[in-house]
Structure formats: structure tokens, C-alpha cells
Image 1: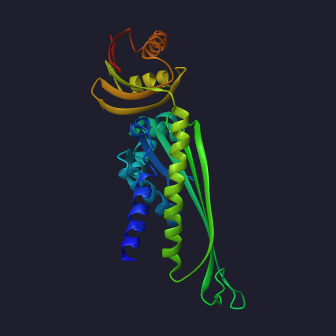
Image 2: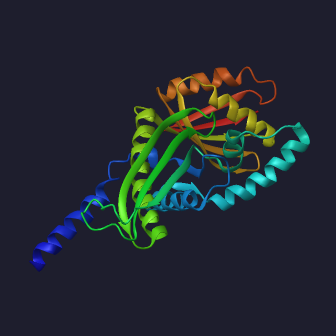
Image 3: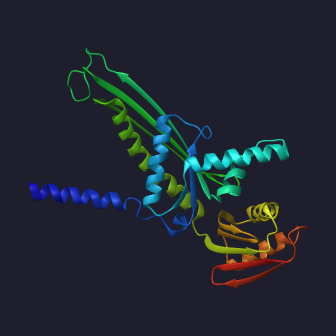
Length: 282
């Protein structure tokens, strides 16, 4: 009996670890930002769901940005931007310009707990004294961080009777829904970028932040570009990872044509080595 228990436990452990095993290298090359659906603040249950999702993303060796780091960046950028432009920054502008995010996932939770009357019975048939009925819904929506384009939405729900510590039980339900919901969202994102080539793009000759912003917008406008992640930015050097639905030669042709319309970025020279494209702006 004891041996049977350990076999069952080991089997469950293996299958739980394999549930995310099919996530492709394309997904693992992205950088995620997870935040409340309504903005940068959320209720405690939503914050808990976000922490669970970030923890799972971290276990999968995928890059992500902590919510408190994003909040600090947001406050700093918004103040400067509003003083210069007289308007608020969009979420996509904040994410793509400040943290180089590829994908952001908006999270919202709805929790409804009702104590069952003593005259009622729980689903198990036990008199419902101190028993609660818990309804939990978790919404996950994924977006392209550069353009705000929707990449997929998942709604996870559960409705169960329980007794004991309400908050701990609800957190347990949210944790389970968050992990399952993330798995489904990642499948939708992977389906969106399916068949795309991962290209390492290095750009030399970026003069300032405005030049980087213009170059980034040109990238976003290239047909076939699915997602981009800014990996590094230092001095006149910027590095991106892009997913392009087409060949590398087609990407170079489209990028060169698009850059030729810019009046400020200068004429580019392009070198190719494997899947690495090096652009030098003169």
C-alpha cells in the first residue's frame, strides 16, 4: 500500500512538471509583464494571482518584470512624458520603451464567498454548518507590448463548497486557476507566433532615445513582424530579439525599405551572420 502511494505521488509529480514541457524556445525568448487588468493597482486576490503567475514564469526560465519595478518606471516616465507632451503615455509605450517587454498579460479576479445556511447540505451530504460556497473567476488576457494587439484571452472559473480558513482556501483556488490559465494563454501566444523565425537584431548608431523610439516604431510597422523584445540598450547600441513570419532575407529587405523613408536615422548598412542581423546607421 505504501509503495502504491509513492508510485501515485511520483506519477502526479512527473505529469505536473510536464504540463508546461511543450512550451517552445520562441516563448522562452520573450519577456513578460503581468499586471492587473484595471491598471497598475489591484485587489489582494489579483495581486496574489500575479505573484503565482510570475513565480511559474520564473520556474520556466522566462524573463519577466516585477510589478513594483514596473510601477517605479511608470511613475518616472509618465511625469516626464506628460510635461513634454501634455498627454498620458499609453501602456504599450511604457512597456516597450522602458522594460523592453514582448508580451503583457492583464489579470483580473472575481471572488464571491457565501456562507451556506445550517438547513442546507454541502455537496458531500454533511450538514453545512460553517461551510461556504466559493465562486472564483480568473481572467487572463495577453497582448503584444509594442502594439497592444490582442494575442489571446482565457477565463478560468471554479465553484466549490469548503470549510475552514476562507482566505487560504480561496488563495489555493486562485493558485490552481492561475497556473492552468497561464498554460492556456501561453498556448495561444505560441499559436500566434507559430512558424516565425527568431532573429537577433543588433543596431549600432542610435543617437538618442527619440531615435530608438523611431527605429522601434519602424520595426513594429514591418509586415510579418509578430513580436519584438528589446534585450539591451547602451550608448548608441540597441539589441532586439524579433519573431518574423518569413525568411531572414525578407526581413532585411523589408527593414531596409522601411528605414529608407526615415529622415533622421541615416542610411543603413546590414550584415548577416546566421540568424543575427547587424544594422549600422550612418
